[in-house]
Length: 328
Image (spheres, rainbow, N blue to C red):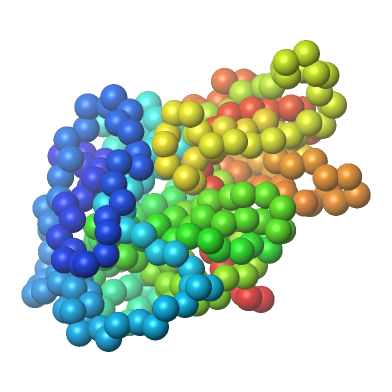
């Protein structure tokens, strides 16, 4: 069984009166067998985390109507399969060697001292510099309950901060509501959705505070050079930039984009998995160069170009992730 088996759709064991939103993602044609996370080896597990939350939910008093309350919906189809393909390169991640490396890194992240824990679950992470001399900006973060890995995902550290207003939270019911996609808007101007890498830590804050400062970053699924000069006969400026919902991955946190490459630096995960951290302008706002610029990791295997140059136009697909900034 490969590591991706553990990041495919999980069995929904949550018992809840809340509606479950399904079919947000479409199948991508890969031959991956779905398996329940219960197949992961559990040491001393007595009661599942889903069961604990179900018991709390049954005893929860009815809430007063609140027109300003953030909408919360449940979904049981979210996975990190595409995200690990973006991190390691899709071919390498699905190879025997790459699959083994991925599995080892997920396991290594899970045994690190947790940087957050409570009596029910813990969150830990590992950087690739610790394991293979790579970058400490790129990590794998994992969530555990009773020594059982509930989930793991790529994490890119950034200092870029975006003022954000939440409109909807899509909680992943199959991960005991410890992961979520956040939909809303940035700078009171543009729409955006991101996967909350800190949702298991700041769940109550996301649900109670609409306006937050968010550290936004991205993992690129593919990167190419953009030669687009016009749209429907209308010429485009040399620094034209935009992003739009992905046509291939029908989840709210995936986008196709055209941007301007502000800067880049090498960022290798191992001797077999090489990459870059890019800084890409996604919205060109006159007199505000950092209106919406994003740090983005791209694996060389997922690049359709070999040379990068500051100021060049790039295009591709990405997955947005974010976490609440310390000043929020």
